[in-house]
Image (cartoon, rainbow, N blue to C red; front, top):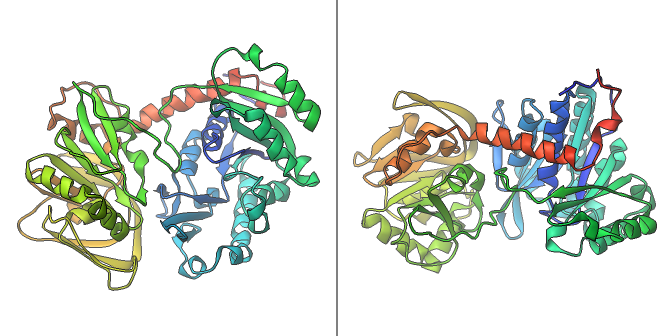
Length: 479
């Protein structure tokens, strides 16, 4: 592709009619599109609420969506791209991560009292990116039409007004009702906010575009805002931002792996490589059921291990997991999931409010400590290098009845039960192949998952470019 001569332009900002309208997906695609044309670009989301977190090279936490968007832009992920991260620990409580580190003082404040403390971090980070990059692509959160949240807003129109962003509002047309939803969202905006809206985006469109008429013209007549692009529904393997919507069930003639979906489960995107593998079925298990038909069971990380473990017991899933493990089914726990597989989880500092007895499948004991470990790691394993990362409060010790399969006490095994503190292990083709071969998988060529994701980003970028949304007209002529 031809490269574009660039100079500073107003930020592009993607807002949505709802959560899960496609904001993160489009932001990543736009970052890759602009990068493909030689434009230095960076993503920004002032505040993200998600238990899917990544760790930067500096050992700081940001949302996984912004980490992916940075990779899409071909820049090093940095905490300024997501200065505030909220990690839910209960229905009405979140751990507040400020510039990559937990802030217990702000976490204790009521929601309405946080803006004064958080806005300076947002403003400083935003302007740092504006100075460094030719283009910044900003993602909003939820909907700017949430009038009940307007007073404390630090992520939607407050950001747009701060930098004079060109705003595009996206709706998921696959759900239906998009034109009413877009009009209603626009009507909820203040006049100075409406002036920033440059276009509406219809996302996940299937079928014949000519059947949309006369709705786009009707919407533009009422608002003065055109439908700037129609993005097709497309299959892709980019991660979901903060949810796991998959409803897959076990299938015959495949390797069936149960992914336990308890409350506050975290970093579920690290299993996308399994979810997208031919011959493998990754089935989310949210309610009690017999697990005898699964070759393996995975307990993912959790932002509140005690609450997740209590759910397993109350639902009856704990008994099913223990029975399957005792009968020889492979059971693997990642981070909080590993802690649950152990004997005890002690919480003397009150990190989660209480300690718990574990499921007893691994002879390990965990103490939750105030200091949170967050770091990228490249570890030695079977003569190979595994790229991974840590995010945890716990310190785990093992008895002599367990093997250490990862260095530095990061992974333990007893027979068919495995546990690891390392996130992202399955992104490594070598580790994925090793585990699956134990489940009867026949060898085939595998790629590290980031290679697959990178190729998908190019597909999404091309689809955006082909949609008629001329994002490149903002720049000086091609050379």
